Length: 354
Image (cartoon, rainbow, N blue to C red; front, side, top):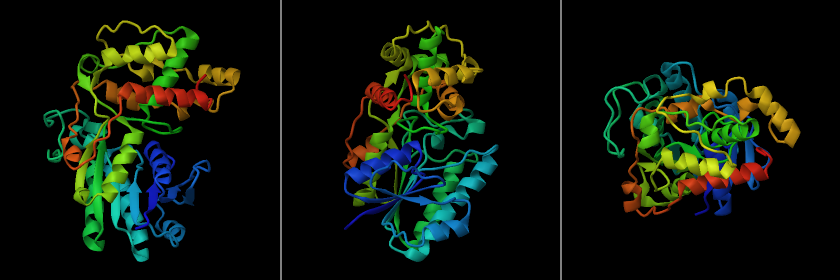
């Protein structure tokens, strides 16, 4: 069976890496975004807005995927709005594809906010025990991840396709202009520290500095998405996805500092958010970009300090269990420090950082 993928959100950190992986595996790939990138070899761009049903139907009229991957979302001011907007995006996409027929599988990417709660109640209240396992139920709070799942479940029951849900931890991978990108954010922060002599100080909590954690390389997430789409035993299942190692930031921070040639500042247990540390740094980055001929001079398109602060400021240890997909045969592994280093090397090679 020839696999034909439609990736909604192809310009983002997940969609970009998934597209590259599927093309390398011989899939036919269409990439949907409001402004799909032109530099993804082997990917047919589809320009459409998931919130505009009429234009979406027109853009997808001749697209007949066997597999649909939903890798995008839009952040709103409140969780009620997150639910309304992001649920609508999923529903519009699956409704637009329905007349074409042929969809066999839909893969939805959510994340650990399934267990930790939405931004408005992040890491608060009664949380399930760690390591997080897929059988742990939904929290008793509003969450747009649940709304996205429910739209997929309803369409699957109506149209007969299979589904999979994928719950990564913080994702490391190449993407510019992404709202949730710790890897690029830390690369920019470390570069600013090196170039200006500022201290390279861990911005988060003592719980994160001292506790165990894990992360998700976008490349291993792409491989799990492809595996779930082509593995019958993975049909209609939700899967955690992390690299497979665990670490403490007290160790990783020094590894990142060494790569950039900066001295890590001692951590005294006080939270000092990156949003505060990087406040007013936009002119410095613009000057640095001009001096080194960098690709992007707008600091706001590179660094998402707010999201990195949310992750590194958690008051609890967060570890993720991977047993479910491993039992079914997904055995891939990625060392997280190497994931960071691979990303940093690519950012330098493509003139994003000096």
